[in-house]
Image 1 (cartoon, one colour):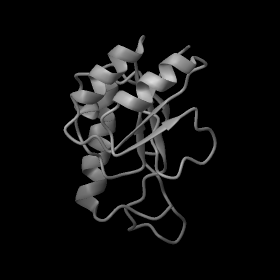
Image 2 (cartoon, rainbow, N blue to C red; image 1 turned 60 degrees about the vertical axis):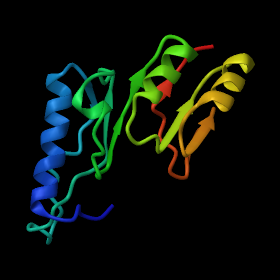
Image 3 (tube, one colour; image 1 turned 120 degrees about the vertical axis):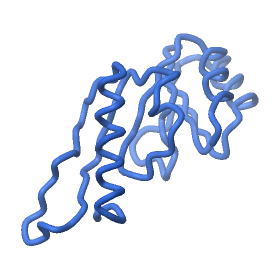
Image 4 (tube, rainbow, N blue to C red; image 1 turned 30 degrees about the horizontal axis):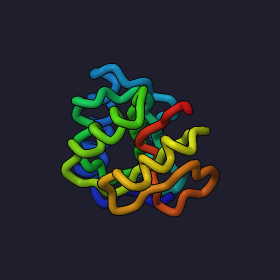
Length: 134
């Protein structure tokens, strides 16, 4: 993964990660403070994963433009769809479930440009925003 566009962008992204943590998210994988040999002036951030991002928190309503995945959990399909409908962006969403009914409801009602159902491995740009148990 290459560097982010500028030092200001790196500072902004690292600040958003810190903000997510201060709002209660767990940093599962932390890419801040990355140093790449022979590229000391680069603006590198390794992939970062934050879990249990609060639905009303800054990370749930901000486009980060960096290698950061924010996981927001929902207890029901209706709760997940409601959370997604509050997004200003609606870029992508995925559901992970063993329930055919939940998968169908999500498929037909989600307001997102891209969506996935039970997509594992390489997701081709689909970000798992909602995790549900069937």
